[in-house]
Length: 132
Image 1 (cartoon, rainbow, N blue to C red):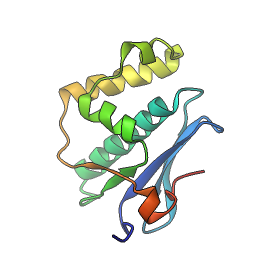
Image 2 (cartoon, rainbow, N blue to C red):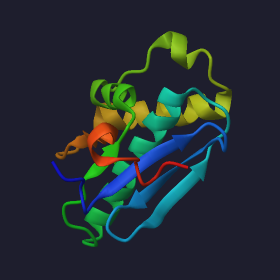
Image 3 (spheres, rainbow, N blue to C red):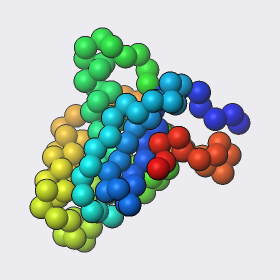
Image 4 (cartoon, rainbow, N blue to C red):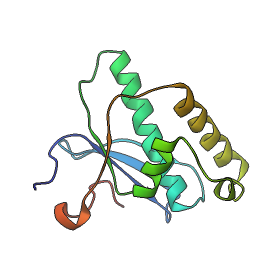
């Protein structure tokens, strides 16, 4: 199975306390955001949410077709699809990050998106292009 040639891929960097989204075809950064120190699953979760929301914004403006989203954050994908972050994980977050996660959860519980967030298959496709 060949690696995707189109779509967006997201990644979290604990060293930089930020995530970014890269356009696979263009090899360009779509967005990045510094959010501060947080667990990997939360950084991945927020990167996926940012990609979903940005894709939704572009779709409403008629600027995008069917952009696939990829991530290595399989646990974070579970959090997104479940619209749930365990209380133990939430309690360890600094207030600004907790607020971002809470807003993301509210959005997930009150909105629907009709496309799939896909797992990046590092063992088959190689390193995620958004990795730092």
